[in-house]
Length: 246
Image 1 (cartoon, helix red, strand yellow):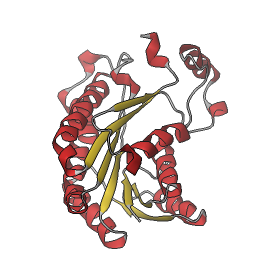
Image 2 (cartoon, helix red, strand yellow):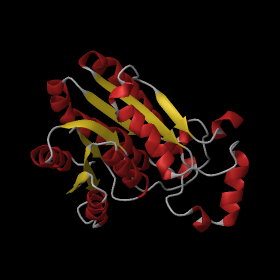
Image 3 (tube, rainbow, N blue to C red):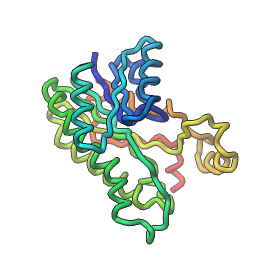
């Protein structure tokens, strides 16, 4: 059974991805921060459904945290062969003249530094097996850029460069690197989203509705599978066609 590690999978989109990969037959490492009780709840839910999962608490922006996380997963489940880079943090909004370099560094820590640290840590296991799947979760903001989010958009754009450069270098080793870019996907029920936000967003999407976390997980599932072995360096935008509006 292959092992999949999904960073930031104790809730929201990450938990939907973890559950989907468990249904695909992966042994799933569910990750949350050290004070996050939800990670074990997600793992328990997967086990109740007949899957294999365990919770591993670590800060994936920390060098020591990443080392402990990968060592713990390898010892408990086996070497990581599928890595889903999903962890995120606060994304404050501010006009660009109020955005400091420190604000940029905060975003880069999640979307560039963390993927580099954890990707480098799992590479030896992938090299040894001659198989690996690294799937980034980026964002529609790279294409549909909102005002007041300059640090976030910059970091997400850099994450795409990281994905493509790694894809080029790792392809000869049987390791693919791809990215899934979600549109606006509320993790709560659609009915809980304020009506004005729901109305404005659905009016901007050709399919006429908001997305579901499970629909993002479907895309990740493909990139994590053996069937995607001839696909690397690619980005799949899952936004209901919103990007078509320019």
